[in-house]
Amino acid sequence: MAFDNVRLPEDIERGAMVGPTFQTGIVTLSGGSEQRNAAWDQERLQADISYGIMRKDDPDDIENSFARIMSFYRARRGRWRGFRFRDLSDFEAVNERAVQLEDEPTKFQLCKSYEDYVRRITRAVYGTLIVYVNGQIVNPQGNWNVSELGVITFLTAPPGLVTADFEFDVPMRFDSDVASVAIEWQDAGSISSIKLIQIRE
Image: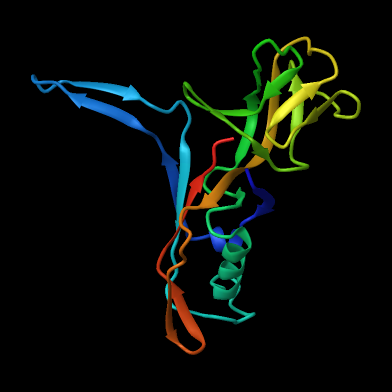
């Protein structure tokens, strides 16, 4: 699917309401007890970027630039094209175990753990990845490479535990093909809500 390998500018992200969502089916039995079923094994991040009145074109108003938000939205054509989003509350991983892909002794998926929940990471930030085997740094030159979807591929199967330090973004898209813009007066407007939803990769 269409994806632009660009990040929503961090100054636009700042102030967003953002957090993980899960899908849980709950059946309440006649005695009042519950049966719960997790429909998703992985979360989907959601975000809402809402702004009050702002100047439509003010180069000094970087954090609340109406023109930049609308330009980014139009360039993605609404919901059509995905992009990178930095969740400022959770974008770093330290000493995280990479998960070996089934029947692929040289391929490992970047992940981040939260107690017993393991989150698959697909959009590591270029230049931040450090890979370890049994606690020793492995130089990437001629030893390994990483794909855009966060899969580390070694030249030969590593002889031990693979861990990594890295920063990461989340693949997102806009959740509406309509940007509701209120024009307050000639040189100012407001965007009441622009929602984002994570793309599964």
